[in-house]
Structure formats: C-alpha cells, structure tokens
Image (cartoon, rainbow, N blue to C red; front, top):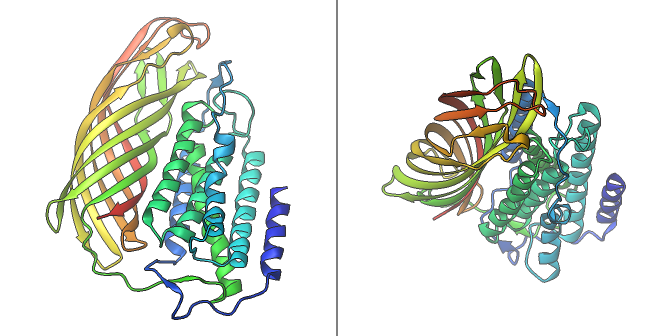
Length: 412
C-alpha cells in the first residue's frame, strides 16, 4: 500500500503544471546547503554500522515471556514529521520545493524507505525483545520518523534551524521509546534512522534530477566565515561494549547500546570551549549459562558529563574537533522477573572523541564523531528458573566501549 501511494504521489507531482523557474530575484533567498552527499554518507554509515554491530552481537538470547507494552502513541507520532512540511506550506510558510517537486521527491523517498525496511524485516527474521514477532530489524517507526525529520530539514531548515532540530528531537524520542519499551534493540532503531535519512536524500536527489531548477522556491547562497563556537546539539549514536563480563561460570553479554543526549556548549575562545551533556544510555543484556542465552532487559541509565573541547574550522562549512569529558551515570533498576539480575546504582565514566562537523546553513550543522569510553560496572545474579541461573554470583570491574555518534546542532 505504501509503495502504491508513493507511485501515485510521484505521478501526481509529475503531472502537475510545471511552473516557470521560480528561482528569480523575487525568490526567497536563504543560505541553505542542499548537497545530498553529507546526508547520504551519514545515512549509509548509520545503517552499515548498525548492521555490522548486529552481526557482531548476533547471538540473541532466548526471550523470556513478558507483558506486551503499549506503543504510547508512536504509531501516530512517527508520521508527524512527514506531514509537517505539507502543513506549513499549506498555511503559507515558504518551503524549498513547490507542491509537485515536493510530492515527487518525498514519494521516491517513501518508496525507497518502505521497500528497504520491508525487505530487511522479511529477510533478517530478528525476534523482538518482547518476543511478539520476528520483525525487529530494522525499526520501521524510526525509519518513518527520521525520514520525516530529514524532509523537514530539507524543506524548512533554511527558514529556521529549529524546525529541523525539533523534528530530529521528536524522531529521537520515538527511537528511544522503541528501545526502552522492548519493541526493538538499539541496532534496530539506528539502522531504521539511517535508512530513513538515506532514503530521503536519495528521493530528493531523484527529484532534483527530474525538476532541475523548476519549482525550486528557496535557493542557496554562500555562508559567512565559520566562527560559530557555541552551540546546542542533539546527539544520537551507538556504544559498542568491549570485552566480556563473567560472574562465576556465567557470562553477562552486553549488546550494542543506544545513546541519546542533549548538549549545550560555550565557546570560550576561537578554538576552546566547554560543554555540558545530559544523556540516556540503553544497553540490552543477555545471561549466558553454558551457551544457554536468555535475554534479560535493556539497562537504562542517565548521565551528566562536563566536556572541554577543541575546535578548528577548516573552511566556512567544515570543522574538526577533539574532546575529553568526565561525568557520572545513574543506572535505573532493571525490574526483571525473580529480581534475578541487579546492577549498581551508578558509576563514574569518562570519554575521548574526535569529530567532523559540516554546516548546512548559517546556524545549523551536522556532526559525526568516534570515541572511546571507560566506566565501572557491577552485576549481581541470583538463582532463577526463568534465566537458568543456578547459583548466586557477582561481577565488577572496569568497562570500555567504542562510541559512534551523529548530532544535529544549532550554532550561536
């Protein structure tokens, strides 16, 4: 049905009367970087890294029967970002594309996204954490939400970066809900987000090839010098735990974790700054007893971190950065059956990271980074038939993880 709708929208958009080129002296002139390649690269890296991490941690444990959790409105909310550019255009807010061009671009994007998600769901057969079905990978809700958020950034990001930041914040919230309510694993939602971003960029690339300069209502201009050193950002990514954790003869398997954070940064000078980050981490756990794996739950935690950073502009669009931070993370109680697995109340942690940011408009940019984190852990296991734990045991020590992050930033 989705594919048929995409085809219908494409035909309607192409058959709409082609207005003369709207890129004139009277056109809205907003500095907006419209190249699809940064988005294509980001979407491809997110999808590829999530798929690779899923394969690396593909030893999914047996699912213990758990109560079916409600979707809390995400069945509807996933479509809000997709509808938003159309609503804003209908009330008179200028968008990048005319009606026909926007219909064609978004129809191709929806078709690519829906076909990719459905094909992977049918081909991979990944069981959901709640055991409801075998269509966990990738997350369709995340794909829809991030596709819509990227459409908002394309159509309205030049008007105000807050449109894009708001849309990506909503999409990130939907992705977090899918993990914390045991509908998906972190790799599922990151792959879905990457597919949504990649499909949108490809759809708009096809639309640009079809329409050229026709029905293009916002055109770009050169950016001013890159001297935005303070920013507010939304960070999303994956944390890949390194090493193994043993409690007696039993292994506690830590799967790739979803991270999401809000960060505020103050540029103290042309190259140095200080930021504060409030972040959520959700890590699925398995208990492995003599190769008998059972999925436990996602360990969720909330952290606060202070991060000094170094910033170096390479051009008006591109900059690189390095950072090192330290903070404290509070672990929420697992609340599993039999109270069989417990963890410590919290832990200090620290990380280093290197990143590259690209400005997409005067005050909106996207950044990709890789990093390394260290923290402490403690797990206590108690006898349980549900998780096949024969005797009490505990494990504690120092943990490390690789970090992969994508962020959207409003720069001051």
